[in-house]
Image (tube, rainbow, N blue to C red; front, side, top):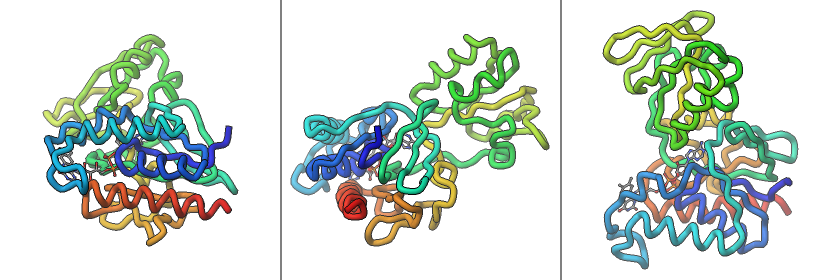
Length: 266
Ligand SMILES: Cc1cc2nc3c(=O)[nH]c(=O)nc-3n(C[C@H](O)[C@H](O)[C@H](O)COP(=O)(O)OP(=O)(O)OC[C@H]3O[C@@H](n4cnc5c(N)ncnc54)[C@H](O)[C@@H]3O)c2cc1C
């Protein structure tokens, strides 16, 4: 099925975009890590959200989720790994599946993960972001897994089930070693672990890796007044577009991004 709108990220910006699109009778698929696992859901009662003083992060997300579901938005739980405009469509790969839309809104929040040394150079040459997508290449080989993805344990279990020898490591300070291909990692403590592959299973993918060609400014996605990123059919909203990193801005941009994405479909 080709959706009118794909939304990557189930935070306030993405859910507001989905609600607005459903109010305009457009089909919507929200692709996200479990929305109630986001850091916002740990927020204590908040004083500055207009109209709902004292609302907690979890309460707000649950109410937005219920509203989007009741209005007919569909949901797919998982990490989006790549976004590719293709003619009049945008394709988004989600773990080892792919979905198609007429437009996509990136509502990714802030990516807090700094790239590791060696990551960019060895991506696709031993470095992977998805075990269930690339695991078969490492059958019966040794791999290192690191990250905070909600499905980390399942991804590791999958690799073990196909015969990989898995070592789990911590992301911070890790360095990926190798020249043409991954040969190992060096941990923050200085320990060298030889391996054939490294799975970086983060909950978020840096915007420039997610959608090659995306223009960034100070590490945030550059979007114009219509929330367009400049890539055909690709819009952005919320914290991923930069300061202020606040709820009211996120929901406002989510609404605007959906409005202009739909306007472009006319
Ligand atoms: C503890 C805390 C307290 C806060 N208090 C306040 C406050 O009092 N007032 C205020 O205005 N703001 C507050 N904020 C900031 C506010 O939470 C953010 O501005 C707001 O959540 C931004 O919404 P968003 O939808 O842009 O991003 P987020 O809420 O970060 O949502 C992004 C979602 O996308 C998912 N995602 C990202 N990448 C991918 C991918 N590749 N595939 C699938 N899913 C993906 C994430 O897991 C997440 O669920 C607080 C934040 C925190 C953490």
